[in-house]
Amino acid sequence: MNNEQATEQTSASSEGIVGLDEPKKMTREDWRKKKELEEQRKLGNAPAEVDEEGKDINPHIPQYISSVPWYIDPSKRPTLKHQRPQPENQRQYSAIGDWYKRGVQETGVATKFRKGACENCGAITHKKKDCMERPRKVGAKYTGTGIAPDEHSQIQLSMDYDGKRDRWNGYDPEEHQRIVEEYAKVDLAKRTLKAQKLQDELASGKLDQTEREHDSEDEDEDKYADDIDMPGQNFDSKRRITVRNLRIREDTAKYLRNLDPNSAYYDPKTRAMRENPYANTGMNPDEVGYAGDNFARYSGDTITMAQTQLFAWEAYDRGSEVHLQADPTKLELLHRSFKVKKEDFKEEQRESILDKYGGQEHLDAPPRELLLAQTEDYVEYSRHGAVLKGLDKAVARSKYEEDVLINNHTCIWGSYWKDGFWGYKCCHSMVKQSYCTGEAGIKVNNSDCTPFEEGLNEPQEEEEPKSLLEMHRDKMMQEKKKKKKKKNKKNKKHGSDSSDSEDEEKKREKLKKALEAEDKRVKQVEAMMQLDERKRPYHSLQEVKAPTEEEMEAFRMKRSRPDDPMASFLGQ
Image (tube, rainbow, N blue to C red; front, side, top):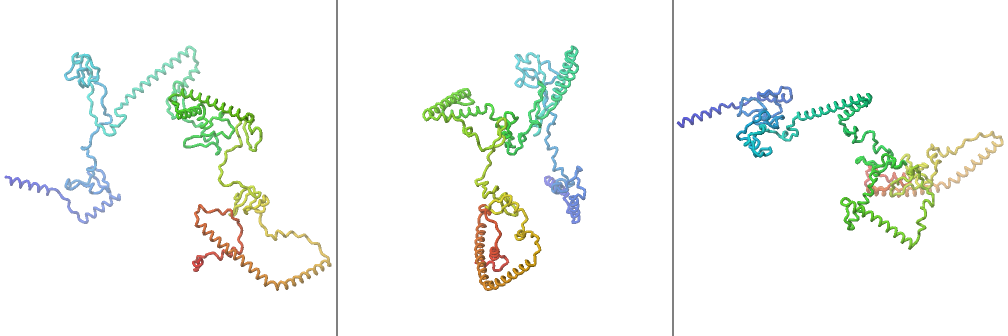
């Protein structure tokens, strides 16, 4: 018997295994067609594959995600249903309109006490220990009267993350609608009373028709101002005025009060202008609309408050128990007595010094400015006494000497530039430390240069016709000059050899000096190139002049040529 059951089980199990249709091996042609179809779908040339629900499957999704394993259900087509959330596994949450019921059941109220109800109030929905009503002297269980209505049976809400944190959860819009209707009724009643009052006044003759129209216009304006909600405005319905809390566009900005760049500084970050923008305009700070933040900050009792606070700190350091906020009255009295004693002490000290040494007449003398009554400083005053011109702020100066004028120049060296050279602007001279020639130098430097010989050639006057005697004399004088020139040439032939040798020696000496100067210049350039750029001196103090023939020859002889094969042996 047991053997028969075992054979049946093995046969059934073998039948189950054979029943699973394993995927057949694809041929090479089928595999190639499948790959081509996938490529066409990825390129968008072929329609996408559709799952069992009729939704397109993205061709870029891998096969191991879209296909169902053959050992689960080989008959299923590729789908993404198993990748989506399963409805049976999703938690169900309450709807957005679901909320606990408020109040009690007003449809029906019990008249007799029910078993299991609250012994205090008689409601069946709670027990005595949970009753929120005032404890009765004799409960409803024993009296059977005054049975309270039952509460609503509340539902169990299941809310998600957002539902638990919703500020308006359980809000009923009908409550707000009731408030709106209530205010509308009050407004209608006010209008009715006002209209009735106006009719009574008009009937009695206290109010004209024009005044009535004017009041109706004001009423409309008040209603309009009451309805608007503009930023920076607050409407006071009692006094019928509109209060502005922000700056209006007609107000002048601080930085537009004085456009002079040298006037008071405006800090754009803090929007502060501490100094008075009208300081140099001659206007009195008390008369202008804005005199700077410091003017408003140091006005009133601000300075007195700061002095009192400073006195409190100094007194506390010396052992006096005073504090500005804790005991202001004591501090004020102590400060006043201190100032009186300080003035008395100064006066006694001054009198003792004058009695001992004298000199009262010097203290009574007028100021030195009034005694001299003159100064070199030019100052202009307005009729208010403010300075209009003069006593400007000192300009920041460097540690080097500035505006030092020499040799009758009215401008400094470097105030003029032309053709790559610096010079003096007053005379257009390019030579440093030269004497100023003024307008004449400007005319000469700006005029077109002419050769020296051409400048000497003056226009010849027309000569009068000579007589025969004068012509003969001139001819005799020219012959004598020719004879003298012949004699001088003969004498020069003997001394020409000696003069040529002397000229050659002079040229050699000049060339030798030029070569030495060129060596020094090359060494100086090498030393300068080794210095740091920030430590190199300037060349503006050197004299600028054209090089001589000997200097040019020395430069050509000492110049190194990179294409010369012997250039590397020149420095050895």
